[in-house]
Image (cartoon, one colour):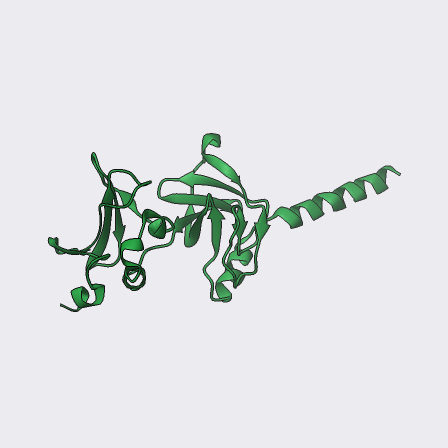
Length: 198
């Protein structure tokens, strides 16, 4: 009877580990589906960088756990949802993004990088553009007095969004030439494709 209980207990233990374990196999299968492994946290998508972080995470940095998943070919649409499995894996805030526990190591995830192609697409909204159109992209706050976000696009351009209050309309949304900061346009008012063709 004791042996049966031990066998049943061991089987339950193995089953629990199998159900909650998160390994690189989950990430690899997601990559093979042509969609970057990603997770939605606090209404933002964070994408896998492939970088492992060998540090101890303080309990105060822990934010939650992945609670649901979608197929590797899909984009998560709910908070705490991933497209690489790992349901039950913890995640925490970390410097430039978040880290997710994968194979007993922290894996770094960052917000999506804004691209020049996306800026061209967004510019077609003109005066309807708002802070919300850019909130899912990786940025750096550089304002002093004003609220200013800088988005690195490539080696030739970056984008600046500035204003008094992120709950109000931006004062400007500038596409700036990286080698000449005085050479810029407001993408709500000027033609982006003409600007980059000069």
